[in-house]
Length: 598
Image (tube, rainbow, N blue to C red; front, side, top):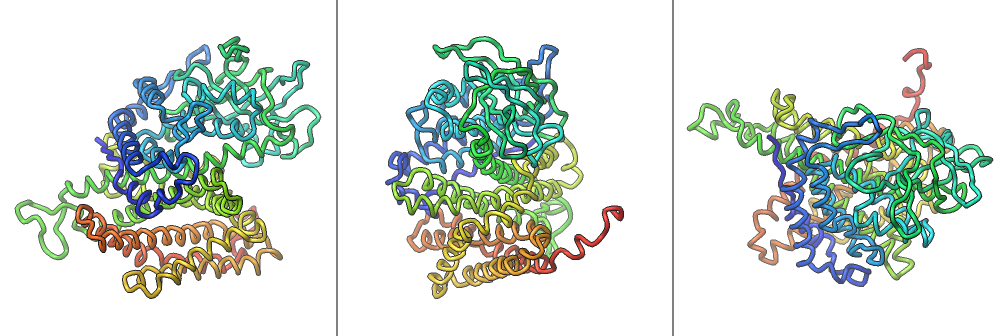
């Protein structure tokens, strides 16, 4: 059966040694996040993830959710009790402002905890995960009355939230949506339409479900300019805050899915349901994108989480499974064969996954720190700079960590050989669960187009130039450091490749936009390789500082960190040249065949 151990030491290394969270104690919530407090919180999150959430992951996948004839949905056995423990622990409100019942702690800490909980049970954690997005949207765009009505219950977890975008005929192109909103005399709206693929759309774990629904008000412009966002609760809320009548919103079916079986992915029917406009008319996408950006970081986190638990199980299996002899001679002469971890190709798989996971964790937490600065810093210049990087990093983080999360779940499954294809070992579930992360909250091809088509040129290229400068300055500052020269040399080569690819787009994509589309996915991964390499260079510097300071308690850990850093630079970073070469071939052969030829 599968195993999971939260990577607490690695999280603390990134937060304390690499990011130096103590330097940000001028930000709201950071003064309380002392190293001792952080260690206590991640330790408790690890315990809950390992002991409460993880034991239900396999059984939840096997059992799935059940829709009953009355439209209600039952979650797998044990989910309600585990969710209650999560809710009562206050985990939903970890980074939410205290005025709405949260703890006001750093968002970066919320993301650190989120990795553990998602790795332990991704399907279960999607229920509060969607609630986080609803909280974010209402915090930013809701009226004072809406905040007072909905946020305290959402934050405490007695109510949950959803986001309703997709319709049967309308996925990425939201301008095609048909769900309509008819104004009423009392200021509310009647919402009618059908939404599909709605995660946590109906379940039995909370008293109410607060649906955030995109719809078009009668008479609104066509396309995306005529879309508004509405709060449509499962149960209407009375003036005193108690629950009233059931709204005519129902689960018509549960989707039959490849994975995430423990999460109720619903077809939702709105039949003149009462809804309340959130934000301005025809500005619904602006409000929804607050949820989307939050969700995209959360999905990148899921990609990392799946890769981490898949890696742990593959490494555990490789140490125990005996098969064949080492190429350099027996390593377990007392046994009939050696553990498969002695074989270079098994090591290739494990080291590749490990190198991406450790850098991906740093990338996630670094990006979450940018979010904290963007939303909490008293300095307008710092807020803008952090928000620029946050916007640029989000599609890279979502696209790269989920593409690699799936790829590495498959790679970990391969370590098991035929046993990886058998359900009882759990690897099949990780592969199946990881696959959705590449699709939802904006398919990864869309993330790549967003990066190349929007983010690079935004504000005259301010964000990308700032990040290039930050990485370039790091290389220059550490170039003459004998211990860092190896890392900066490889990082600078990758930086040169992504800068050259960016320049190629500037010179070749304006006149021929297909060139941008043809190279966008390679560019996203090229950029990801460089940012992950930057994370490794920063981690190598922190590890060397720890060793130089005589940190004997972590000596083996820090030395292992440096080995993995070298592996990344030698074996993975050279892929930037391949990605650059693909980009520079342009779109000609990709677009030449007639549609009928396919």
